[in-house]
Amino acid sequence: MKTRAVATMAILALTAVNYAAARHMAREDAPQKIAITARRYEFSPAEITVKKGVPVTISLTSQDFSHGIKFTEPAVTLYGAKGETKEVTFTATQAGDFVGQCSSFCGSGHGGMQLVMHVTE
Ligand SMILES: [Cu+2]
Image 1 (cartoon, rainbow, N blue to C red):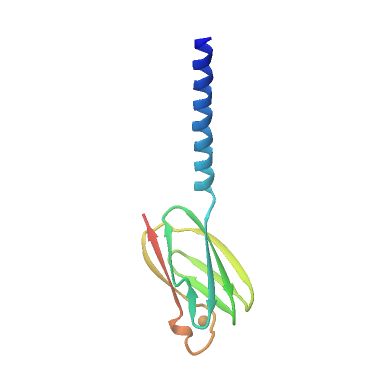
Image 2 (tube, rainbow, N blue to C red):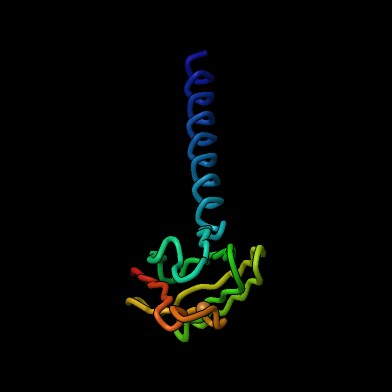
């Protein structure tokens, strides 16, 4: 009787560990999602933080006009016409701070329309 109770407890403990591991893995595997909205002449949020080596999905919603996002490193380009939401998934391979630009001419403030990406180790 005692042996059986110990065995049952051991199985329950193992199940709990496996369940926790599976949940942890699922969370790690799903890309981090970041929603960005663009309107003349700013991205919101204007700064994002991603983790090196972890897939990230960025969505861009252009509210008032066509806007785009272009990063040279990590290589990310996204374009959304007015009212559209577009997505891109990428994995940053280099840590650091990177500046992306609006890639679709949207008016007088277009040149200063930037998005900063912090890639952490
Ligand atoms: Cu622009």
